[in-house]
Image 1 (tube, one colour):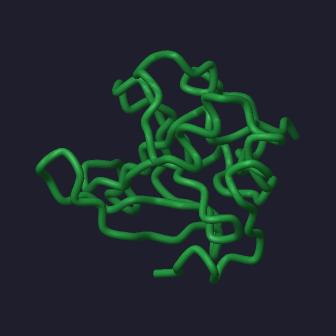
Image 2: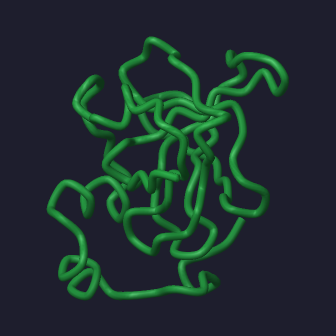
Image 3: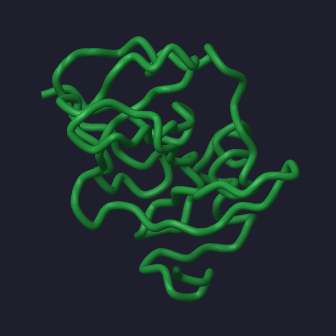
Length: 134
């Protein structure tokens, strides 16, 4: 688990605010969650790559995306070495938080109720990503 100073890309809040929308800043930098069903990426099923909205690191490919019915874009596996994890003990529960390994941006959480072959559900905030079509 990396600390703030261990990421390749580091910026202070003012620098992040210059390049992110207010909603992206709240999710990526302040670990908030977008409302379910609000991201157009939830229903995006074209071929392409989902990249970090803060630093453009490729995170997930469309072949690993599935409709989880949760209202957030969901994937069963990330791109190798794209993400980092940490323990999130907010809201009186323990979850595994997913963040961009390059800039540390909060992406979402991973759960053990996904489809084969991994059995994982990477439940991501759509606002934390951008879709790049192939």
